Image (tube, rainbow, N blue to C red; front, side, top):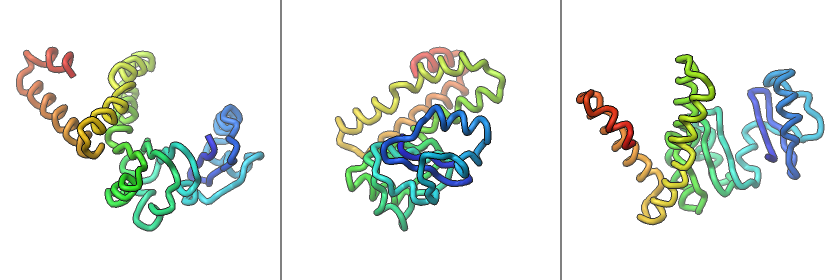
Length: 185
C-alpha cells in the first residue's frame, strides 16, 4: 500500500506504507492520525487518484473520479469500496484506456450487505462466512465472463444484478420456492 487517506488528509510513500503502524495510529488518534504520522509525505486527498499504482480503491467519496481528473488517473485497476466513486463518463474513459474498472455496485455489495447484517445483530463470524461464500469469487467470475463474451464489465454486471433482482422478486411472490431460489443463487 503506497497511499491512504482520511477526511483529514492523505499519506504517501512510493516504497510502501507500514500498514501495522497505520492501524495503530488510526486506533489511537482516529482519522486525524494522518496529520501527525511520520515517515510519509502528506498529500491533498484529491491527488491520490493521480498516483501510479496497481489498484486504486476509492472508498469514501461520491464521484471522486470525474471529467476533470480522469485523464490523470494512473492506476491499472479501480476497485471501489464506495458508492459511485466514478462518474459513468469517467468509468467509460478509463475502460477505453484499458484500465479495469469494477462497477461500484458489484465491488461494494458485500460491504453494504455486511454492514446491514452487522446492524441487524448478526454475529461477525456468520457475516464473514456468508460473505466469503457469496462474494469471494464473484468479481473474478464477472471479469472472466465479460472477457469471454467480449462485453463491457458494467453491462454484464447490470444484467446479472437485474437477473438476481428478478429471482428475488419471484421468490417473494412465491414463498414456497424461496429456499430453492436462494440455494440456486
